[in-house]
Image (cartoon, rainbow, N blue to C red; front, side, top):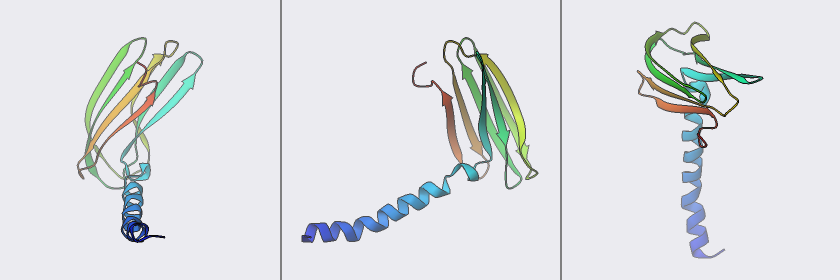
Length: 121
């Protein structure tokens, strides 16, 4: 291995390890809110599910697009007392659909979760 290859190996290894650690800290298990999708023949039900490890204020907005459009925006205080469904939406899924959930946690965490045909609608 040449000098460049040796230098690359020395400096790239910590960067690769650091990237993996940062991806692990942003895992779905650390999120206070998740998106649950139940598909049935011709319909889709989307649930916003709370599962916080600590008491905290969370704001979220869920938008479900397809044969019709629905949007729900909420601010809620979550307690670490197990999984709870915060919001439910149902849509006709024959023409494709997209669910987009945007979350802002008091801890500073912000994320967007998508399900369905979001790139196609």
